Picture 1 (cartoon, rainbow, N blue to C red):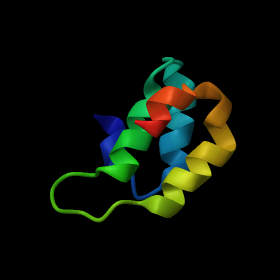
Picture 2: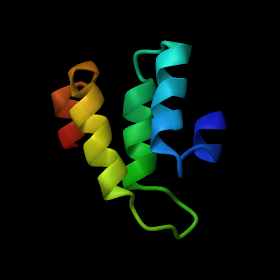
Picture 3: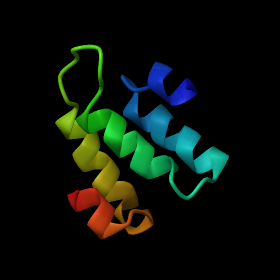
Picture 4: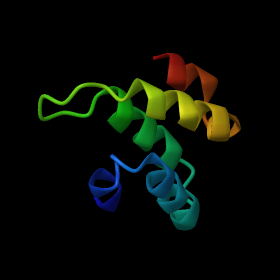
Length: 65
């Protein structure tokens, strides 16, 4: 997925989510930030930024899970 290539640039990843316009895109990005796979550390700063900038687009119950 293109977003995975841009994870290090959280602004570009968020822009990509906005461009594709899928309702679940921000949630998928949040999941990638919190559980990046491949032994990488979670990207908490990027996750907080995403919640701050696009929290209204996320389902609160899904975020808490």
